[in-house]
Image 1 (cartoon, rainbow, N blue to C red):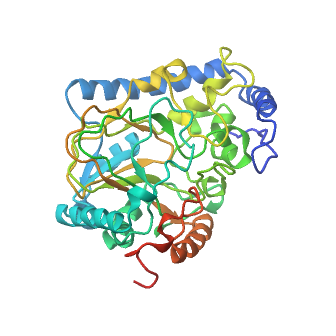
Image 2 (image 1 turned 90 degrees about the horizontal axis):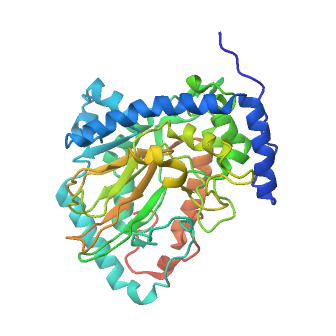
Image 3 (image 1 turned 60 degrees about the vertical axis):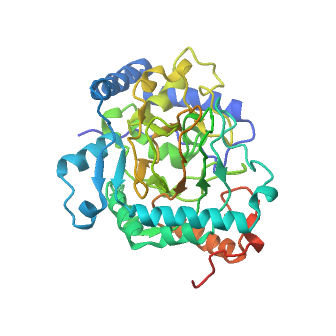
Length: 412
């Protein structure tokens, strides 16, 4: 029987003031706990190499590596076991026909009207955050709008709830003697919209992960999430184990943070989107987080550095430190309005560049936030923001919609 070592968990509840010193101390403790760090890294790389070669073969044959299912298969509980296994392997999925094209385009048109009647173009003050400040590429065209009728109708739709609960079901919810969340409950997590017009030239957004960066190394809750890796027992690591995930704090003190546990991040297409028009990509390897965590412990990284990670910013992925992983980059396939795409909260993702974009590229960001105390508390706070038309607490205090006409109202 495999035993778990007593691990050197941090005593910090929030990020320490002296980050560099804490990183140096963390590296010493982790190396002692792991033992043979190069051997652990070799094991992780060998495992990932097999997955990467499989992805490369599929893409060389012109195949998308994104698993695809339909909303009707979810609704009728007829998703093939082979596809559920592939979703778990890749950590991402396309849901075809999540909403009808007519419904999605109607929401898109209503969003345009909502923005125009409230003269948003003349009110907009530019990006309110610096969350993506460590990435080399430019920001997508993100609109800090949260409470439009279109967004609220999509979030509250029974079809959305059904898909979110289906996705929650991929997680191991009971472990370490606790039940970590209720997969049959899905809280609203209000996020923004992207509207990118034809003719756009954009550098996109470099590969990164969202759900915690520096916190993954320095805070005890995240160290417990990755307890098996920290013990040098990679073979026990399960990226779908929810243990301690609802206990983590992410990006506190920055302009943008995450106060909810999201099993999957996701967005819903509001128009037809072609795969070569500056779209979402992922590195479809849920276990790649093991590589990201151990890579800074190797000798070619400075003692107080974590391969480009900095406080209150997303975790950047680049050729210098993570070239192995970038071989697995996988664009989404062509989408029809009403399709949705989803990816595991640890999955590396980004937005491809585009030159002179053809047609529109409009989406609503709607993740899956399951039933746990952390999500309940944040939902209560969001309800108060919603009533006043304020930006949710996880986002910059821009509050554009406070006095807007046509805002979705409490009790609607």
